[in-house]
Length: 291
Length: 291
Image (tube, rainbow over the protein chains, first blue to last red):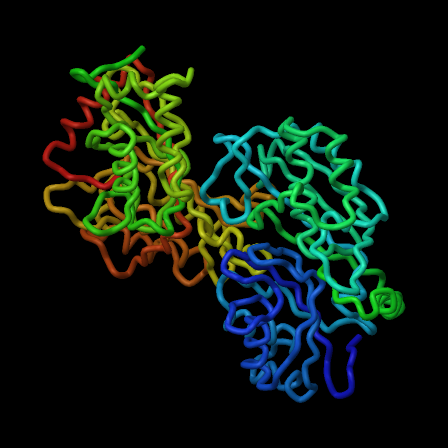
């Protein structure tokens, strides 16, 4: 099921990274970014400049586990990838990329993208988690890179009550850094909190935030809007008031980037990928969005 | 149940730390060490030089979650600790220490030590875990500070078969960096491997290593001795041969410090603390041991 764009093969990459030492996803001159690191690795391995498109353009300090990207690899380079090994070109590309990226960026998987796949525009949902330790008992220095510290205990029921008021298809202007020409309407499908009794997040307050897409710093603003309710300092009337602001408001704090991880990206079935990409691209035409 | 040494109160501290940025436990001039950081914090809070004694003197890069230490705090300073707050002196000391240590060192708990308690000499067991990711699927950049990366798949059954041959009360000279006058006889009570299906360590190869005490770099040498068997490169005959070496041998690699975490320290019931400390101290007299 190989897809070719002209004389190129579109590779689908699954990435995970610790965002601590990256100035976010998007390439910026003289800063270490995930895109910059990955494109440099691709150019080194493929011996040709390669542009990477990603599902979730994470902000500085934000992490990812199931990040998805695509890159178009010239056919000649793709076919030559295994060298003398008996690996597939996709497997060889994964191994070679992983060998030249820093150990805070892991290339989990490379496959040939299905026909019509676009990592950004085919995506139907992004799922983030925000992790908070709000007691000394759960404050683990070995987890501090991806768990935010909150000095006051949070009430998960209060967090859930507050978060539920923000769900649905609506204008999230109060939570978005403004960008000219960019819509701030999003469909927030899930914003729920739990305190797992076991597992990797045992004892933490963990938010799952799921939407079709997110604007810049939106997840951290959502978290920053409900934690004052979770600690009992603000009520739902306050939340309703700040959430209806027509633009980003300083009343809503942006939560610490370290607690935020992009966990997964959803795509439609293969036969719907191309039509989804066309529809998304049309809807956001001329709008440069964070996701 | 407060214990006083002269006009001092003995405090029992439970600590956790990410060892990555520490040159180990033991204070060393001009290096950042856990002991150095903690004693500086104590001196700042107590306004008096305070020496800390620890259960497990971890090597550079090794982590801890349930590390136990004690410190004798002058009675006056102890009583003044709460200031105008209604906290106990122990709670106030914890909060104030935690506020002045780096965020890779967490003061989890401070209590008044029971009579006869010595963090080092009263301890009956130290439990370490060693965590290895041996597949791309389990290689999580957010866990890389405390999970070692192993590029070849490990067979947990083979690891267990190898590890079982090293159990018991015996001379671990082959696994210990030599120190003049120090015994290398230890009682290795558990050395077992598992690959958990769920939880924080899901999919990893995890060793639990439990002994009365450990000599310098012993846990990492034990891991380094059995992983060649786990990857099928060496057999049990080879292991038996290197394990019987009368001194540290280069045939045994010392595993990467990042994978090692001191998880807990066990003590006898309060009424046996003092006698245990006396017995241990006598047995190790004039021997300066790593633990």
